[in-house]
Image 1 (cartoon, rainbow, N blue to C red):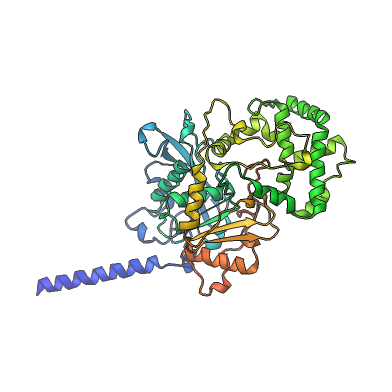
Image 2: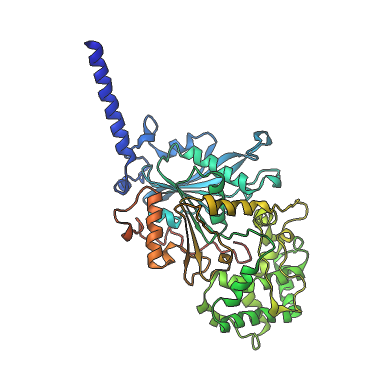
Length: 489
């Protein structure tokens, strides 16, 4: 009888425990008030059991995680951190390096967005659009080999898309023990590419992917899609105005180069990597039209001076505004060596036909290898992007790609075929490289928002009325894209 009573009592406790856990796991938008703004979590989720309640203590209890600083922000906790990563995920004997990341903490009962720019990470608190939509936490990661997240000495052969995806996988695995709700990966431009590559190599980690304006250069030397874009974008009048100014900059190469030479001498700028001032000058000029469409709109065409009547200074200043004379100096290139190395080894880079510049160009669009120091070995791997493209089209799941209708980088975009599940490609009409869900047509915006909320586990009762769970806050939300004035995504 006593044995039966003890068994019944144990069963009752077990049922109660399972019931409580199930209730906590089902927490949705109503739990968003459980903020840890004061520094201590007011309510612990299932993963909190038996652990310290302060989120900083829980994060720093993760082996390899180090606090750099904590910055206050209303309604959140914001941490700048480093995490110890292996230089080579295939061979841990190759050493380690410290990879920088940030954590915008709202609550462990909210979904988490894993954000990457594909470059360095900002240490200023900020929400990517999906973070605002799902009202969640955000982890932002610095891409390996961007300083300070660079192994010393740098073995550049360990900079590839698989190694970078494995960085994300290790951080996700470590943080999932604290943030045990749904996770989404996101990023814009190279960050969108990064989120896509992560999903390709670790498809079981994320519950959804939102990739913005992500180029997909499947065949490195076939870039006719870009030529078609520039032949049709906007109006003929606008295209002619831009092309004429670009042509004029090459016609006036000699006097404008004197201005660049004087500026470089005053600034201490050098041109060793690219191979001299003349090569750098032409590279900037060739980026001019691309740079205009990457960040500007048809309405800005009127601000471009008429080539025939513009002074040398006006032509010089206009090119500087839209593509930037500093970008191909050694000092401008050095922070982006990791990007150019990847473009030269896996990602590929665009090359355009420019018939309006016939007889004026000496070098044409230079390959990415020209922007990488010569002491770094480079070997292109043509199979890398083909593999990702095939996987996305045939096996991708819960993926959303957002492009801008007037963004040149969208000329070669990701596609989803019949093999992909619950995946979408949407284009914001007239948008540039800052395209986002908000800029989609109403029908696409509603559908995209509903899918993002569903993937995050906070789906609305009526998907036809889906809307972000938090309003736009200019103090913390990203509105403008990361500006890479030269030909970088």
